[in-house]
Amino acid sequence: MNKFWRKYLALLDTDFTTQVFDNIKNLLVCALLFAAGTNALDSGHHLYMGLLASDLAGWALIGVSAVLMLLNVSDGMRRLSRLPYHTAFQVILFLIYLVLAIRVVEIVWDFRA
Image (cartoon, rainbow, N blue to C red):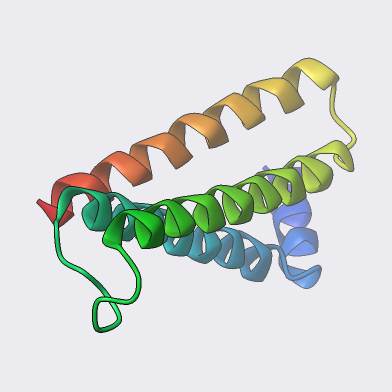
């Protein structure tokens, strides 16, 4: 137990919690942008005084959120690849992260409705 406690304290010394919260914050921002984009596609309102159709704005928000999500996931994978664990463990962690990312988007969709 003492070994795990020392590893935990070492992670805290390397700003592990800051990195985790930043990653989650970025994930939530991407999910909100994605939900806003899908909401713009569902509604028929014209944005920006009729100069820009809501469909174009919706697709643009979805595209931006997809690029940001890809950057966030690739950053998480890069950080996972630095861990001194087996590749199978890293793949499992990545799949868990991906499932959580998809679930957050679904929660934001439900919250929007």
